[in-house]
Length: 119
Image (tube, rainbow, N blue to C red; front, side, top):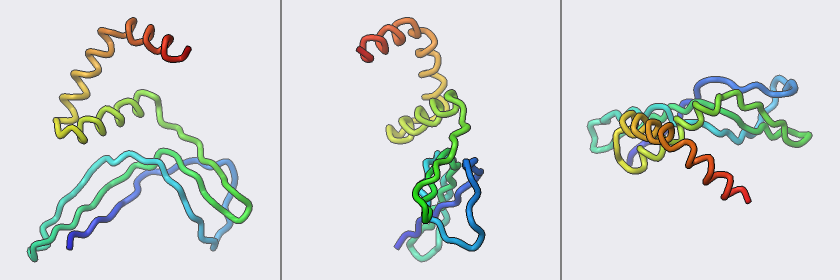
């Protein structure tokens, strides 16, 4: 049976302190930035997924403490485009470059469409 693991990279700012020695349940929003496939030489593979934490919620005894997402909007857009390319099975970097060229070219039309969608 294949094995799947995650490694969470980075850090997120939170608005208040936590208590040392307590266990917290976390809900994390993150980008998958790398996947490593290792052949276990027994017919199975280990897939290690590296996640870069963006934002999350820490559930504690007194409710929810929300983190602050410090990622720039351009980084979020890049992550979304890479995820779309990955799902489509195309080269992420090429898809990103081509799509960004199209977005810049059609930006006035895109902004007009956004206005109509917001109505």
